[in-house]
Amino acid sequence: MRNFLTVIIFSISLSSLATIQEKDILIFNGEVFELKNYYLEEYFELFPEKKPKEGIISSNLWRGYRAIFVAINEQIYLVDLEIRIREEKPDVLFSTTWISVFDKFSPECDEFLVDWIDDLILLPIGEVLDYEPGFGVSFENYSLLDIKNGQIVDSKDFSLRFLKKHFNKCHVFLREEDLFVLNEMLSD
Image (cartoon, rainbow, N blue to C red; front, side, top):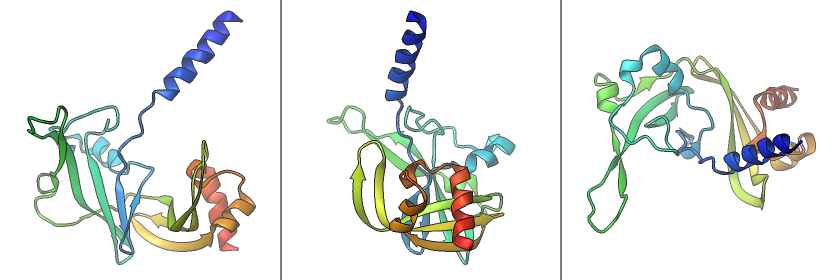
């Protein structure tokens, strides 16, 4: 029993030390949203030579880069790829800055078509209504994007009231299965 409790306490202490990752960004209808998934990792598994290697890798940026996507004519494009580098500021101990490496990644074009994404993406819309410690932030409204082969095939808007009526947890913790259920409910 003592070993079991030691393992539980150790596991809890490790999870409390986890660092929140720098999020990739999606620009949709002129608004900036942080993404929970890292869509370029799938691409870099197929083309590892294209992955930026000169940026700082840290506990909050294990990927070594931040991707910026934009929805243009219902299609998802990568429009920038940034890495964090050390900035020479003598008065600041660990100063860093973001620089673009998109030209190295895609020297031929300004936008890189991202046609491998198949996902449901939940976007918060409107005002923040409340913050519940341990549950996260709730927003006035939401939009659920259904993306197939990088194409936005459907977008469904709904309120926080609708979300709370059908799910007893905050949107931050909705699992992939929950998003599929939500998508079906919104289709009816």
